[in-house]
Structure formats: structure tokens, C-alpha cells
Length: 391
Ligand code: SAH
Ligand code: SF4
Image (tube, rainbow, N blue to C red; front, side, top):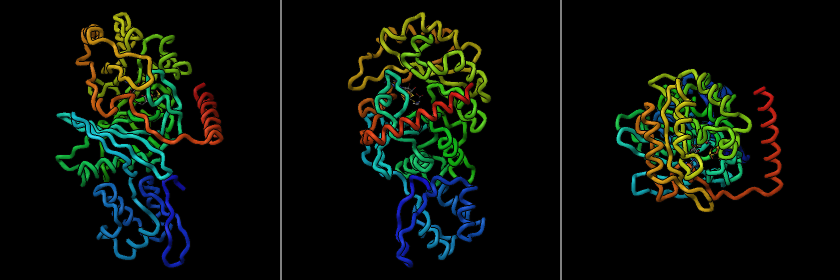
């Protein structure tokens, strides 16, 4: 049973029944769910297209399915999207949604329109177990992983809101997806992988792996798996070029240091001049923004097909860090440009609605202390398993 399931009442028997979300099922899982109901396989193809190609939410609109099949499906399944708690529009066209999940937890997603593309930034967890010192999300302890249906549901919700159905239409507004919202996607690897496979499926939304970018703070063993399973674009939250400083800014570095991270990126299978890795580097005044840092950065990644994204530090309430001065960012950028990397500074978007990088943090209610302790124990167990894997 998925967390995304809801209760429904069976009209005939009066018994309470669980309706399953279809948004967490891949093609094979859908086929077997239909087989259990005695429905033939071709119904799976039809249903898949209604859900993933046409974005239909009401089974009675799935006209070629036959009346009996439609009512049977409606008693067993739903295709509900996350609810919208709040939608904010920035003056620069950025849209931020605070979404509410079935257990009333909240997460955020952001749409960023550009001249040549429209990018949806989605969340993979509520909060984050990692505690990068400059990141707002990192101050919110992990509440939980998002389910497959909650990850795919964000994309469907955005397509509803942007008027993007049927999928693949010429003037679609959503063209790219970045896993750069709340959470560390590689600590929710299985759900992220399955959700991306559904979104990439050719008979549905059919989004190309070239239009999906996964950003990670550097969970080395999962970087390799991502390359093998998905082949999506990779972004690395680098932020420091020496282990001592990176240990402080991105504490997962104590477990997977720079050497192992750089090696994992070198080994990432899809990298080429056409598909480069993106190095994200937040510019924090007096911390990581010296010219020596810039020179060390280009040296560290030399030989790897790369883009560098210098992100002006976005302040949030309670942080002691300050964004580097423009003049310093300029000096840093010049060194990077001289080394052959074009236009490296990322213009912050949606700053007026706290939608910029690292500013996402929902007001999700914290779990009771006992629930949080159980969750922490689970995370620690996963960490241990992970440590075994990486040795
Ligand atoms: N957990 C993943 C995905 C989140 S992506 C990761 O860390 O890569 C969010 C990006 O915004 C990351 O590169 C993160 O390092 C960056 N970021 C976090 N806080 C920021 C801030 N206050 N200002 C600018 N960028 C920030
Ligand atoms: Fe988590 Fe990424 Fe923020 Fe670090 S930067 S705390 S990994 S969301």
C-alpha cells in the first residue's frame, strides 16, 4: 500500500475500501493491478495514455474504456494530484506552489520560465536529513520521503496549472525538470528513479532524460546507479574545493570526500561536450569566494565536460552567511571564464517570493518527539547499510 492511498466506500457492499493512486504505478505494475481485476492488458495501454498523455482525472471521461471498466476502475483507483495550499507569482514570472499531501505535510515546487524553456523544480523529500550550513531546507529535519505518486503528482499538477495537456504539445510551458527542490534525491533513490522512469515513458509524458537534471550533494554510490538506471543530467552541489571547508558547508563530504566525488563524476557514463555535468557553487562572502578558490575549482574539475553555476548566496531568516559582493563574484567568474566556462553566474529567480535556490522550506508540522526518534533511528540504519555498500 502506498502512502498516497485514500479510503473510499464501496457503494454495493458498504465496506470501506482502499483506492490506490495510479500515479505511483509503472506500466508493469499497472498491468498486474489490472490483471488482478480481470481486465485485459490492452486496457493498461488505454488507461496509461489517458493518465499520462491526456492528464484526465475523471475515469468517466476515459471514453474508449467501456462503462463497466470505467466504474470498476473508479472504485479501485484515483489519480489525485497533491492539493495546492498556496500559489505565489513572482514579478519575474516564477511561480511557487506550496503543496499539501494526504498526511497534511507540505512541500514546495517552483516553475521558472525562460526564453527557450520552462523549468519545473520539484522536491523529493519533506525537509532533508543533511545539514548543509548555508541551506534553509537543511534546517528542517526530514519529515519523510515523498512517494513515487507524490513525485510524479507534482509534475502532473504543474501541467494542469500551466495548461500543458496533452503532453508533448508544441507550445508546452513545462519543458525541463530539475530535482533541485527540497530534499536530497539520492537519499530517496528508489522512488525518484521509479518516478523519473514513469515521466520519461514514451507513451505518456515522454520527457527526455536530456531534459531532466538531478542535483545531489554527493551521495557517491547512488551517483553511479543514477547513471546506469536513468542517464539523466547530473548537477553536483560542490560549494567548496578543499575537504576541510566542504566538511563544514556540505557535511556529507565527511563520508564521501572530494576525491571520491570527483571520481564518481568522472565515471558518470553520459558525460560529453553536449551533456556536461553542472557544478553548483554558492558564493558566500569571505568563506569560499577567493580567487585562489576559483583557480582551485577549475583545476579540480579539469578534463571533465563541465558547466559551472555560480549561485549568489540567497539569504534566509536566521543565517549568518552573506552573499559575496558583486565585484568579488565578478573576479571569481572571470577566472572561471578564462578557463573556458561560459556565463557562469546564475541569476536568482523568484527572490521576492522566497523561491530561489536554498530558500525552500515548508512550514510542515514537526512530528512528535517519539515519531522523530523512530525516524532518526531508521535514517541511521539506512546510513549504516549505505556505509556497508560503499566499502
Ligand atoms: N539536496 C540536493 C538538491 C537540492 S538543490 C543538493 O543539495 O544538490 C538546491 C541547490 O541550491 C543546491 O545546489 C544547494 O546547494 C543550493 N542552495 C542551498 N541553499 C542555498 C542558498 N541559501 N543560496 C543559494 N543556493 C543554495
Ligand atoms: Fe539537503 Fe541539498 Fe540543502 Fe544540503 S543543500 S541540506 S543536501 S537540500
